[in-house]
Amino acid sequence: MSEEISSEVPLSLSAALELEHRLVDDGLAGFLAELDGGRVDADGLNAALDALRRHIFAEERILFPPIRHGGMAMPITVMMSEHGEIWRAMDALAELAGAVDIARIRAAGQNLLGLLASHNDKEEQVIYPAADRELDPEQSAELADFLETGLMPDCWECREAG
Image 1: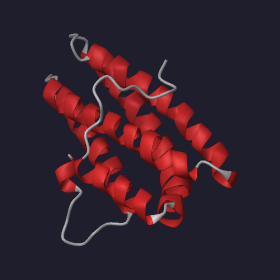
Image 2: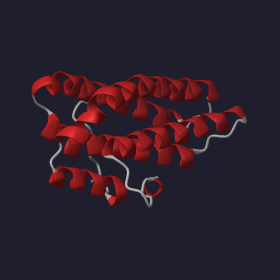
Image 3: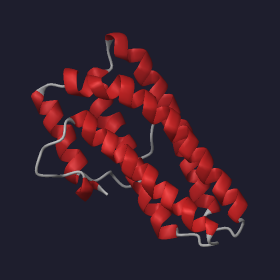
């Protein structure tokens, strides 16, 4: 999914992060659409979940630490807590995807999309503008480089997942 972020015209960090939201949402929506035909597209689901995990890693390890001060402390605490809830919902969906109960898989997928809709809206309105405003050039470059080509470490889990 990260290949779709790079373009001829550089995106702002907030625009690149929002694009990742849309790509993940589209991947999950595509997975749910396949369920309508009785098909469980495990590869499509895994790609969307991997992209979402990588996105959360970028936020928690690169974006949040330098802006977690002053007026941003509480919003970031909320985002971290929601990441844990999202992570658990991802794990539940991934586990169900190996089952044959399409209705339960669909419910878990719709739950995850609902969590993301609420969460992403808050990030896009509050957190991402801070990325454009508050990161110094080195921090901005680190996040931009990661969004374009970075790999999440194996077995990394968000702090609030447990």
